[in-house]
Image 1: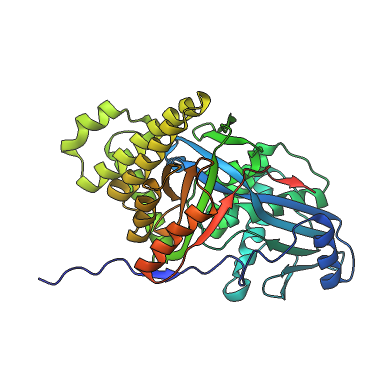
Image 2: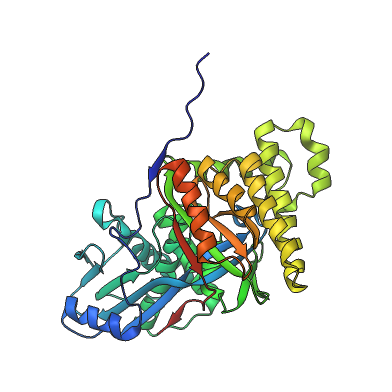
Length: 404
């Protein structure tokens, strides 16, 4: 019997076509770049952060709870209004401008596909009773690493929403802005995500994690204990069918909920799930078990954070990854290797994949004794096994989306 081939991993295609970590993201620099491209100053400059999914993997669209952290890297947007019925979208990375007429947004492809995120926001605004701007010049740039599972898509959606709202003189509450971003992702871009990414980017606070009860949704923050740091190890790989696999997991969860007689898996208790195991398809049971137990881990993690017990937090993070690895099956050997290596390293409390999975990046929660030299040892071990070095990215918790 021939063995089944393993999952095919591919290099990640970034949201913006070129590299990252090369642009100054302050307001003056953005204004200068905007003037260079469009010959005038922007009227509005906004910024929204990427996020780390701290714990709560695939729990958001199942109505559960999740913890995330907004980071000090993100997407910035500069915008000025036009009166000639023309919308110009410029990405600093490609050096190209996409020109579209005013009117109902149409989905783009090829090199212009990145504009689907701001276009999705334009399409979403009327669904919340909000006005859309007519013509404008628009510039976006980012200092987020591509494909690291840090949600550049939510960042550009929220930064775009704030710019468009500023251009139309509107100031809805923060929750509405977050929902606009999610609507854009679900209904225009076509990704069936929950509210985690947009919620963390919108409600982030320096030194705090964002807690979301997705059934509400309800947003809160939890203090991050002193002495803890985040490290991201980005493999730059994704499963070739990542979009389809994410959608497949979404369908599997909805099917499991239906089989259990509930609308969403958040309504299933651990006891009910165990009692129903014999009557469930084995795959459906594994997906449901991951979600139900992951929701419990989020709640336990909140309590551990509130008491400052980073050792307990770390164990929960690593348990989350093992569940993703064996029950939800959205990890890869590359991610598993990084987690195994990190949890064995001195000073690391715990580690897990971050984001949707099927490739991408691993997050480590560490103490002060884990430094750049220790991180480099992990990267070298990965390179020795897989022939390519992962990016090593120390991360700080930053503020949420804002007008600069």
